[in-house]
Length: 123
Image (cartoon, rainbow, N blue to C red):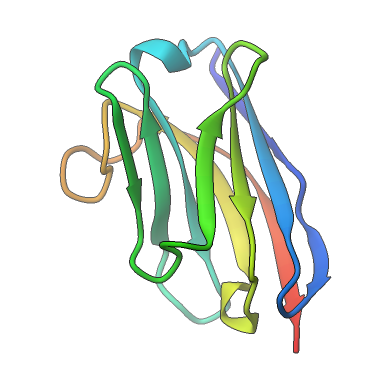
C-alpha cells in the first residue's frame, strides 16, 4: 500500500517561512517523482512543485519560483518543500503526490495523493 504522509503546515505571518515534509512508503521516490499540489478555497487545484531524482528534474509553478525550494531529504523516500517569503495567496491545503515524472500537469497526472496539510498565511 502506498502512503504519502505530509506534515509541516501551520499558521505563519506574511513574509515568514514553513517547511513541508512528505514521507513516502510503498513508493520508491528515487525511481519516480514526488511533488506538491495545493488548493485554496474556491480555487482550482494547482501544481506547486515536482522533483524527480531519476530524471534529474525539478519544476515550480511561476507563482512560487524564487520563493519555494523542493529537495530530497537524507531520510529515504522523503521530500521537503521549503517555503520562504510566504504571501496570503499561498494559503491553501497542500497535498503531497507521487507519480511518473515532472511536471505532473503536462506529462502524467499523479498516481498517488497524500492527505493535505493546511498552510495559512496571515496578512
